[in-house]
Amino acid sequence: MKRLTFELEFITPAFIGGANQQAELRPASFVGLLRWWWRALKGECDIKRLREEEIKIFGGDGKMASPVYLRVEGDVRKGNNLINQCRLNAGVVYLYHFVTVRGKREFIEPDSRLKLTLIGKDEFLKHYIASFWALVFLGGVGARSRRGGGNLAVVGYEPKDLVEDFKISFTPTDNLREWLKENLKRAKELVGSPKTPCGEYGKYSTLPDPRNIDFNSVLILSPKEFNNWIEALNDIGNEFMKFRKIKNEQKNEQNKRNEEWVLDIAVFGLPLRYGKGEAVKVENTKEVITRRSSPVIIKVIKTPNGKYKWMALRLWGKFLPDGAKLRFRGYTKLPSFNLIEKFFQKFGGEVKEEGKNE
Image 1 (tube, rainbow, N blue to C red):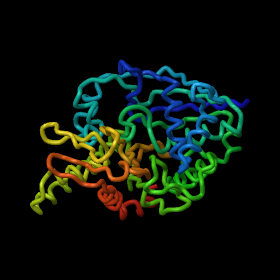
Image 2: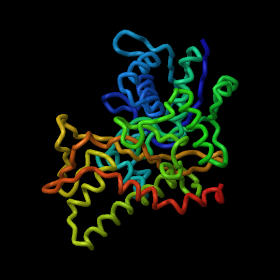
Image 3: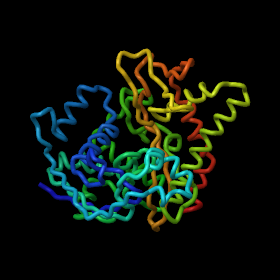
Image 4: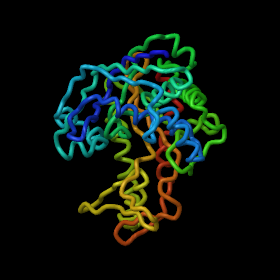
């Protein structure tokens, strides 16, 4: 059995805890997140085979315990009034919408430290390490994790040689884009991701494989660095807000109804409410669908020199089952990723300048 301990820090507020919404570190939450990122890395099209392998690695089915022990500990600082910290930053308020609109919610404050320990055999440990890499550098922890909540940075880890044995890095370099690309490739190799992935319209959300696609089309980084997480998240939040509002204005100029515009932006995630709180609905499907996580992850990442950049990542996978339609008031439409593609294309010219700012 081998032991690997990571020292981490939260770089954005983390809305994570129990049912009573009190902020706390829970090992079960991290295990659930690692399972999710493992599936996203794996990209296995055969769902039965995927579940069988997942149970062997993470346990489950009421019969098998996980072959890897996970422990989370830390004396984190807690806050409960994020509105006061962010009230002058419209972009942050927009991304953290439900937190700022619904009032106070306890959260783990940025700069809080924690330790995560993994104990297990190499054959299983490698899957946890790959999933943990993806969680830290591509995602976040807790509510609003796809909009910059609960982002982490690795402060250090022991033993160093164990991570080196798996040939994956937890220390970003100045060429951040290339570093992310190469380590995502390695993470996919560690979990045994098929060389022929499910692709854009697979049955569940997966990470695009940089071995097969243009990485620039699915991952964008801010062309400049920021002094703190609020500045970084506020910048992309404002861009995201303007992008959606510009779309609305363009449709009005063409005498198209707001209802059609609402259906266009619904692919950024459900539930979506507009006007007097009316929700976009899903029809033409046997199952009742009221929620669909966004295929776009927005997050903050810490650079080697202690500055901050925002990042946006697009996930592959069907938005809704085949034939399902979005309905808002009297209008219906099949979901389309065209607007998401335009969002990533908007920054196409800017991200090419990234190397000049690092």
